[in-house]
Amino acid sequence: MSVTASPRLDAAGRALARGSQHLRGLQHADGWWKGELETNVTIDAEDLFVRHYLDILTPEQKEATARWIRSKQREDGSWATFYGGPADLSTTVEAYVALRLAGDPPDAAHMHRAATLVLDAGGVERTRVFTRMWLSLLSLWAWEQVPVLPPEQILLPPRAPLSVYSFGCWARQTVVALSIASALRPTVAVPFGIDELRTGAETETPIEPWARFFTLLDGGLHRYQRRPPVALRRRALRAAERWVVERQEADGSWGGIQPPWVWSIVALRALGYPLDHPVIERALAGLDSFTIEDEAGRRIEACQSPVWDTALAVLALLDAGFEPAHAAVARGALWLADREVRVRGDWSVRVPDLEPGGFPFEFANDNYPDVDDTAVVVLALRRAGVDGGEAAERGVAWSLGMQSSDGGWAAFDVDNTSKLPAKLPFCDFGAVTDPPSADVTAHMVEMLAYEGLTDAAATRRGIDWLLREQERDGSWFGRWGANHVYGTGAVLPALAAAGLREHPSVGRAVDWLTQVQNEDGGFGEDLRSYRDPAWRGRGASTASQTAWALLGLHAAGENGATVERAVRWLVETQRSDGSWDEPYYTGTGFPGDFYINYHLYRQVFPVMALGRVLGHD
Image 1 (spheres, one colour):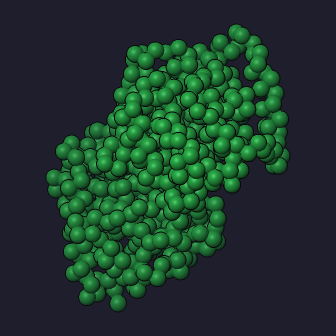
Image 2 (cartoon, rainbow, N blue to C red):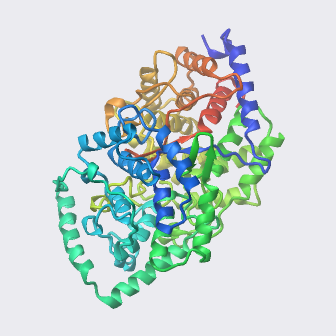
């Protein structure tokens, strides 16, 4: 029985109407949408660390942040990197140290449980390098015992192996700031020690040949660090300082993301910048704008997603049957058109002749527009009937110029695929390069098909890339969303838009989605699938992941029992106000290491999926 002939049609229609109404109510008066972007508590712990270093941490900030961190501790004493995930050693250590800084005594029950878990997991000695750098700042670890990041790296030519441009933009900004800190080794005292977290174990020696080589090289860099050539070191620090300052965004951030933001503050302060320096003042004011405080406590958004959220919301309302002239759609589309980036960022290092264009992820990260946002924004503008003064045309041209040599598209850079950066001893804090991914490439193909460019050479190369990248089980990997459900839910609409609905790859993907549907009718995929293939397509049902599966199935022409059961799950789990609940994290920052709960995903994707399945798109 097809969904459109189902006796549940009325219930699904009412759910869509309630969901659309709730989504409209979340729109800001200026036209944009932005859901909270929730991550793990290391972001909040590190905010306390940097404020303590700057001597601006207030008792009120300590108390409110500690309340939030405590609320995320689990029964076994640990903290995780995502809701329902396994205990994470580094996250637990950072949370523990933050609570000590806030005044929690080590013999308190919750602290004792945390310390016991840390010791059982190998102690502070087994934490990631990034965590030990924070401990070094707090005088709880020795800078001599963390890998060296020489600031002289900034002097390497952009095309040189291991230049800063070998890293993805998020890692690049963090590495440059950290290289200043690595050279100057700033510290601040704290009124406690963490001997209770130490086992006395030595750092493990890597086995992989390249990793062993770079570990040996790090030993040489430590010797160099003790007595670098004065003139060369001075030149490198000046160049790194200039690089950092030039990349501060209008909102005071660096790339609109927390890791380079806080380490840039630390680095510039170590260089002697006073707190009332305009760069530092803007940085701290910007952090305040990323701070949420309510009855649950005080927390920091690692980044913000208004452009992305708004583009998705506009598309969802259009899918739900709203006309382009509707006030909510029109205001959202006009706001998006004004977000166009017209300056050259780091992306231009690899494509210097490409004219600026495209759209960013956040309110103000013009140095780093991205292909994913650009593809979805252009699609939203076109469907809403807004050209934005040729912003869409420039967005198409810019994103076409960002195609990698293998035919795929990455988020921020072209051909940022070197394997070497990940081998460096300090690169254990997440993905450090930006290779093409199925989800971004799919969004590009879908947008180009809407533009009437299905037969263009770039589009065909993108389609070929997607077909090559299909997994053996029929799914596609999801770089920026969790995970194979996201990748598959993105690729199937792209292939359908390009006229490949009957391609065998589509049938294999539909079979995979059908096989991984949960007994309750929903879809879910645990974030452990990034490390363990056994988790692919497995996990508690969520609203966003169920919607992604529906988007893929609908695009493939499916309308049978699998679709009907998924629609029923969305209808039955909708709350009375038209929203859906979703404690699970379904967004991805760094696969395997850092995850995101986009609070708007639970709303925008179900509306989009129900609208398409019910025939409103």
